[in-house]
Amino acid sequence: MSTVPPSTAPAEQTPPAEPRNAIDRFFEITRRGSSFGAEIRGGVVTFVTMAYIVILNPIILSTTADVDGTKLGFAQLSAVTGFTAAVMTILFGLVARLPFGFAAGLGINAFLAFSVVGEVTWAEAMGLVVINGLIIVLLSATGLRRMIFNAVPMQLKLAITVGIGLFIAFIGFVNSGFVTSTKNDSPPVGLGIGGSVATVPTLIFVVTLLLTAALVALRVKGGILIGLVSGTVIAVVVEAIWQIGPKIEGDVVNPGGWGLTEPKLPAQLISVPDLSLIGQVDLFGAFGRIGALAALMLVFTLVFTNFFDAMGTMTGLSKEAGVADENGNFPRLKSALIVEGVGAVAGGLTSGSSNTVFIESGAGIGEGARTGFANIVTGLLFAVAMFFTPLVSIVPTEVAAAALVIVGALMMSQIRFIDLTDFGALFPVFVTVTVMPMTYSIANGIGAGFISWVLVRSFSGKAREISPLLWIVTAGFVVFFARGPIEALLAG
Image (cartoon, rainbow, N blue to C red):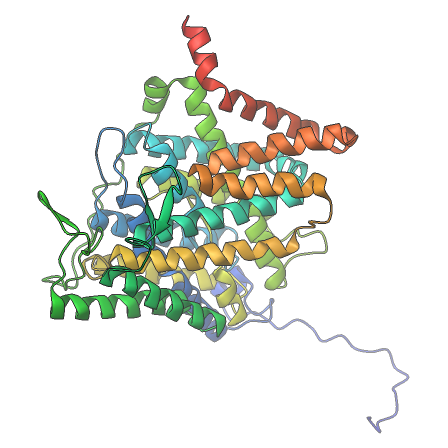
C-alpha cells in the first residue's frame, strides 16, 4: 500500500499526448496509445498470418473449370490476389483508419468455384461479384445493411460460419485424396484408395495437416503459412527423390500422382506479376445464360455471405482493438462498411474473388496495432508478394488442402456460441451446417436453414419473434429452390 497521504486538491487529469507529426495526427497513433513501432510490428504480423491467401485463393479458384471448360491460371490468380489485397488493405487503412487487413474471402471463393461456375463462365461469375459489391455499398450507405444484419438470429449467423467451415474442410479432404468417391450407392464416399491412405501425396497431406494443427494449437504466429511452406518443402524433396509425377499427364493416369500441381522448383523465383485477369468481367452475362431469377439468387447468396461475415468480423476485431463501444460500434463505422463493399467490387474486377476483412488481423492487433497505419505496412507487403508468384505456384494441391481443413476447423469453433438446448433452434442450425457440405453448396445450406427456422419457429408459436425482413429473405429462398419448376412454368 502507498504511504503517501491522499491529496485534498482536485485530481489532475493527464493530458493526452500530442501527436508527433502529421502522420501520427491523421492515424491517431498516439491518441490510441500506440506507437509507430507497434503499428509496424502489427502490420507485419497481420501479413504473415494472412499471406497464405496468396497461395490458397489461386488453388481454390484454379481447380474448377467453368461452364465453357475454361480454368483461371494459378500465376495470374496469385498476382491479382496480392494486388487486390494490397490495394484494399491500404484503402481501408486510409479511410477507416483501423488495423483490419483485406484479402479474398474464403467462403465466397469456395462458393464461386464449387457452386457458381458450373452454371456460368468465370467472367460472368466475377460480374455477379461486382454486382454483389455494388449492392453492399448501397446497403451500407443507406444503413439497411445493419438492419438486415440485426434481423437474422445469431444462431443462424453462427451456423452459416460453421457450415462453411465444414464445407471448406470437406473440399480439403477430397482435394487431398483422403476422401474419394466409391462410385457406387453405398457408401458414396470412402477413405483414400480401397479404404486406406495409399499414395505419397495423400500421406504428405496428413503430415502437413498434423504439423499445421500443432502450430495453430501452440498459437504460433503464421502457423498456417509455416505449415504450407513446410509441407511444400517436403513435397519438393519427395518429388525430387522419387519423381512421382502428376496424376494425369496426357492420356496416362497415375493414381498415386500429384493432383493439380507438381511440386517442382520453377526456373525463376521472381517475375513481373501477370495482372492480365484484371477487367475480365462480364457484368450481366449470367442473366442471359441462366435467367434473371437464378442469377439474382446467386447475387443474393453472395451478398448475404459477404456482409454477414464481414460485419461479425469487424465487430470482433474492433472490440479486440479497444475501439468499439458497448454496442459494438466503432469509429467511422459507415465508411468501414462502404469500403468493405468496395472490396467486393475490386475483387470482381480483378477476377480474384470478393475481398473482405480477415479475422487474422487479430494477430496484428495482439501485437499492438491500433490504427490504419498498420494496414499500410500490411498492404505494402502484399504488393511485394506479387513478384513471387512463380515460387508460390509450386505448392501442391495436397499441401494446400491441409490449410483448407485447418481453416474449416477454425470456422467450426464458432459452434460453441450457439445455444443448442432449444430444439426449435437446434434443428435449423443442424440443417444449415449439414446441407452445405452434403450438397456441395453454401447457398443450399443457407436457404434450408432460413426456411426451417421460419417454419419451425412459426409452428412452435413463435412467429411474432421473426423479423419481417427474415420472412422476405426466406420467401426469396423458397423461390430459389423452386426456380426449376417456376422457370418451366413461365416458359410454358
